[in-house]
Image (cartoon, rainbow, N blue to C red; front, top):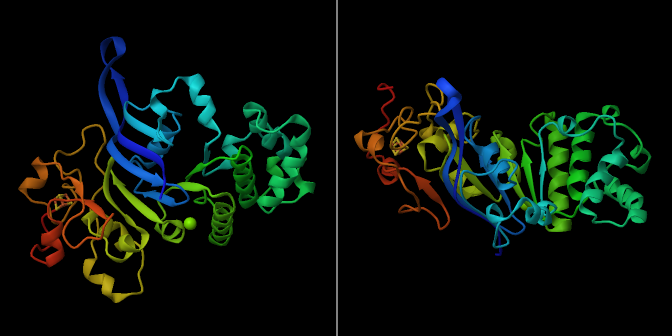
Length: 338
Ligand code: SF4
Ligand code: MG
């Protein structure tokens, strides 16, 4: 397995201005010290509720937002240390697909123009070959050449997402960040687009970072899953371990929110109470303690380390002080307390 992307100690704080002279009075700690690695050819998902920092992570990797702190190494080159100019060389390798491709494309450009634009910026395809490349791309994503000179509004949501994918592919990327890329689509269309992404992954040896709040989608597409809560990673595991033996109380709660036909899973059923606290002054210690049914004194004081606990498979990590106790049933959930 070859490392493609290594994120280390990534922080993304957004200043809150206020008071006299508009000084920075506080920070939104959108992403607070996270580390993970993505290997070539795999699909890693980041899941969590809105505001957990998953999209911010994607944007920080691409430097659409300058990270506050931390390292993002792509093929062992620290992207955060590059100048804007040097970064341009890597732009093509890292592409992003958004939830609503319509919002990120110019409605007055034809599909051919949209697809040629990135090739122009990158100068990746000689001028006389661009038209040919456009037609090829359309075919690759399941559209046809007659659609090249149409405008985005003439397409359905699913087709527009195919255009978004074609645009990302137009520069031969290595990593594609899919930020809620199929969330706005109907379930049947969603499946088609996911299948297309999987085909393309095989064909071009693509690596995906899939950002989604939809566990059904995540279960379908991921090799590994990262669960985030309030700017922190609470659990990382391969897809099967995560869905079949989630360890962190938050992951268990997330999974209990989706209907599971298997009654085996009912015993780990946790229903979350309350809302996600503000990332401005996140709870001390374990950030999940205000909603965790297992929370103890210690949870409010000590930040739990993300690590592999006893009885967990290699590569499976969770950040909770009481994984073993919860697992053995020694600790009963205190649902009344909250
Ligand atoms: Fe719950 Fe404490 Fe574990 Fe956090 S560390 S998940 S509060 S038991
Ligand atoms: Mg795959």
